[in-house]
Amino acid sequence: MNRDEFTVVTYAEHPDLREIMDQVSSEPWPEFMFHDAVSDSRWNRLYDVFPNFQFGLMENRTGRLVAMANGIPLAWRGTPRSLPDDGFDWAIAQGLNDRAQGVSPHTLSALQISITHDFQGKGLSSWVVQAMRDIGSRSGLERLIAPVRPNLKSQYPLIPIDEYVTWTRGDGKLFDAWMRVHTNLGATVVRTCPRSMRIVGNVAEWEEWTGLRFPGSGQYIVPGALVPVLVDRDADTGVYVEPNVWMVHELV
Image (tube, rainbow, N blue to C red):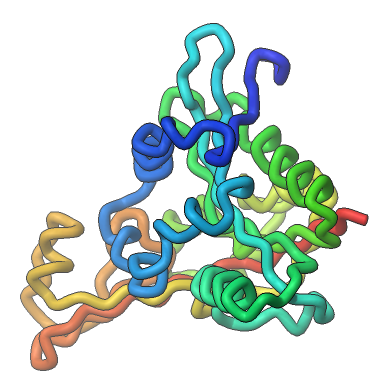
């Protein structure tokens, strides 16, 4: 499989692909991930306000969209260590607030990358991240920052995120596959963002989202979650606070 078998297509160029873009974006994720309040209230605005930063990877032979990526430019110019604990949620809010206030961006933040199930494990993730780097460079932005969702962490939900990100393989490379994609392209691991997303629902909603029962209060391991979900039956709430990892690509 060669990179020239695929073409990067932006929403700005192909607004007719919006429905397909949404389908590809949603395919890999567990249902509960679609109930983050910050994202729910702002996600559609990304396509209206920043159409050039929402893009997919199309297979030339079939015309099929096989990957989707979303990013947002924002006016962050601090030191990498100053990136906030609120990763994904902060990036969306910051980028849209900057645009509303007329503040010029300096940085591109990745928000998500989704690859259809039958194209996973074929090297497309690196091509999509590189395409995002290229879009950022062409737009005159200085850095690509990414609140990376370490994809293997869901297999180790009881391990603290600060410990998990230090794990390496026998060859010395990072244990986590998505983190390796970024480091292989030159990114630096900066710090964890322990409150990257916050998903809150009542117990019935969490049971619907997960297909599980939560008969008592406590911490529950949920398939696809990076850390346990905290359920409080008396308050009728389930809370999931997802940790991610800030990684930074220099573009200039």
